[in-house]
Image (cartoon, rainbow, N blue to C red):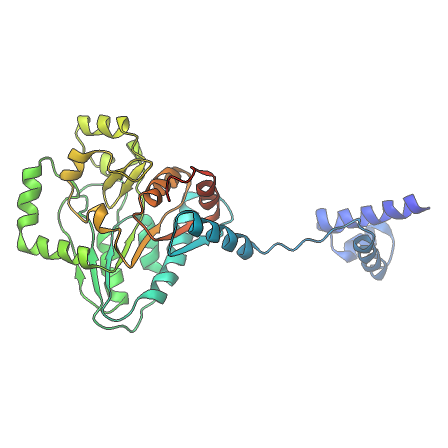
Length: 319
């Protein structure tokens, strides 16, 4: 009799919890009343046939964020829950979360430096206007004149400036040039020099991590010589920050290329009040890890899958 009773509880529980039948449908199929179905479901819980476990995703990501904050000695860390590990979804969600964070921290007279890319474009699309005064918005690194995918550099700078009621400061020069003498001539221009100085002055820097290898926007845009590509590969490049290419410990992986790059230096990121790294996705894990090991950011905004991968990486060399 007891076995028959348990079998009935299991049958009703499976129909309700696994097959998603309503109580009315179960009653009809089994030839019993709906109140009887309700009573059997309650008994299934009471007798341990069904275990109900409530999982709060927010609590899980908060714990992961705390672990990352401690591991990499960060000022703030936000881990955004996403339903699946898909690049488009990650970029959109991180942009949304980062927009809320930026809105909260921006104050009168702040100078905000920002780079370009799809993730940061999502940030600007989601940012709400804030009633602040004397905020400065500046582009941190040069752009690309040709790219198979839109870098959204002008939309990002304009959108951010509009949100904080200010005039944008563009850096309308290439991210990388062929010769150091060309770079020296460009940065000697007083207009370019002024923008670069604003980038150094910025107390808030917002950037992401570019992918290494052939997926790099700069590489696909034809900015590198064949020798550059070989050197980047040989030196274990994991990605770029502000068009500065780094290895797994956050060190410059190609000094000659770095000398031809126009924009904020990595050494100038370290002292920012808010150095905000916004990135996620399987192809960005190594680059994010390198950026954090190099102490180029003190705020990280990422997704829970990337966050868990970062926690599993390395030992104490980032301390």
